[in-house]
Amino acid sequence: MARFKDFNFKLVVIEQLMYIDEKLTPRFSLAGLLKEKGLGDDSWEYAQEHDLAYKVVPEARAYFESLEIGDELLAGVEELCMDGGNRVYQECAPVWDGEDDLFDIASLDDLALLPNLRRVLGTEFLGPGLVDVLESRGVTAD
Image 1 (spheres, rainbow, N blue to C red):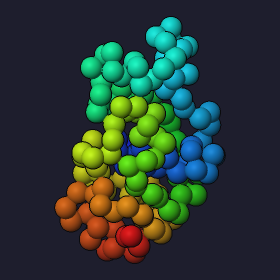
Image 2 (tube, rainbow, N blue to C red):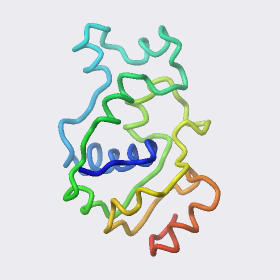
Image 3 (tube, rainbow, N blue to C red):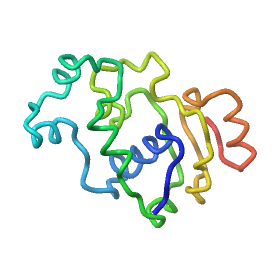
Image 4 (tube, helix red, strand yellow):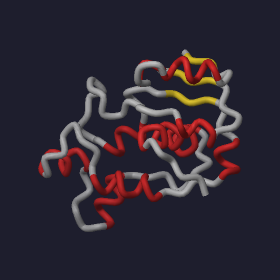
């Protein structure tokens, strides 16, 4: 199983595989997880009450960090989209407006895990110089 170095890069991959392609299942729901643990079923309210506004909810981080993604699924990823409205971000930080760097990607060391990646949309979420890294590997950066 692949091991990601950059949590935010992994989230973008999860967005593609879980919420867009629907190949990575089951589909994660923070509200469902909270309900299952007896912590309520309103993720927005939970984040507000636990001083987690504009932060990744620890239960979501733990789930996504431990989520294993097989090499076959990773090989099928040809495009990634980084957008403040991504569902994975809503599941991680239900009280977040996309106006800060909470989900910015700092490293592209994990590109090797996606051998067929051809295009990345929303490259403004990448740290300085990372667009050049994409382009040097033949990945279109939009």
